[in-house]
Image 1 (cartoon, rainbow, N blue to C red):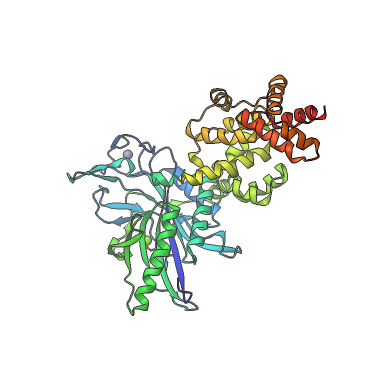
Image 2: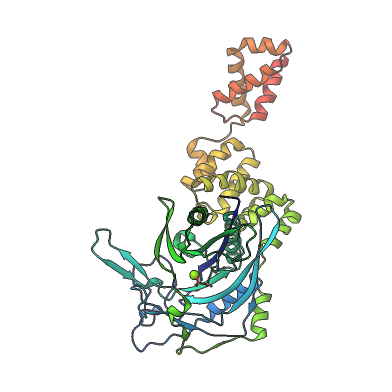
Length: 479
Ligand code: ADP
Ligand code: MG
Ligand code: ZN
């Protein structure tokens, strides 16, 4: 990107709340049910039905507001946002317009130089999700599934404070981890529980005014968001450099071509004809109500990080990486509680397990094995049943076919040979086959010992206990 320009980015993040029921009816809020089974007259918008606000939705939104340093409104309300779309049977969405539940917060991230930087949270409001259209792949029309209609959402709107795709990536990861910690959303991006509208503009370095922004809707992968921002900023600079003007419009990202495409002109608030929702009462919150939620907020990533350093003597970096995901962090704690070897558990999670997750482009919550299975692996190494080299193969296997590591090593025949008689047999065989190495060793060439141990390892397919091999060779060579 031309160094003459800087990027300006603001995000509108939608998070589906993990309440048991929907926002205005008692239908189940479970993901993945058969189409149109989690529905009732209210969320199907039958005439004459009335919404009732789910109190848990307010509680979860207030939690999110407190965890992101927002002011909580004592006096808030719902509004109708009017637009027609086939997956929205009411032809309006109940949202919040001028009196959101939470305002004026911030999230702290690191900028590209590693310095702390606050990203402003303009507002957090509650609203209902729309249904889903399933487009028939043979062009025979579309079918609507209303299971998602009325699923509770919070929309977290950031200030245009972000200046690079790296900052955006860290902001989103931080936000995701906060929402996971306070347990208001499962944040499964692949299921659409967390998705972002990405607003991008560019301006000349040092300019006071922002440039015109474009908005790309419904992005649900970190990688796609990073690529989209870099592509879109470049595109805008090219337009400006050619003497053109940026249109304020809504875009769609195509992940295959790596390009943005125009969807429609940007709509304004006035296009939605917002008005106060007449079927719901105002939301009045007492100080005690808010205080009570504040008191019961769970341990957040920062304090967990400090605890890991003092309680488990982990490094700053390891503690930070483990606590960046509540799922990873919970797994660490559960496995540590069983095997009592925090360093080893942290190492497996941050090295091999994280590497495999990266390769598979998976989030920690997709780890297919349990904390108990990980603890078992650590115990098997600590007891000397397997070497850590075999441990690496066990981790690979745990991803493919998760089960008790003890069963895995039995099935695969990976148990370390620590039987004295068996080791002796191998050592004698290797010595008999390598008289030159014996002569070399006796002539003072210590390297010959390494060679012999290597041969014995080869002979046992890596399963011989290396300490025992070393000891036994030394004994035999003394004679
Ligand atoms: P709308 O719902 O019309 O998109 P909002 O005010 O809800 O409007 O959200 C606007 C989003 O766009 C915010 O996240 C804000 O930070 C961001 N934004 C506003 N102006 C710019 C700009 N010039 N460049 C980049 N992002 C911007
Ligand atoms: Mg928007
Ligand atoms: Zn319903």
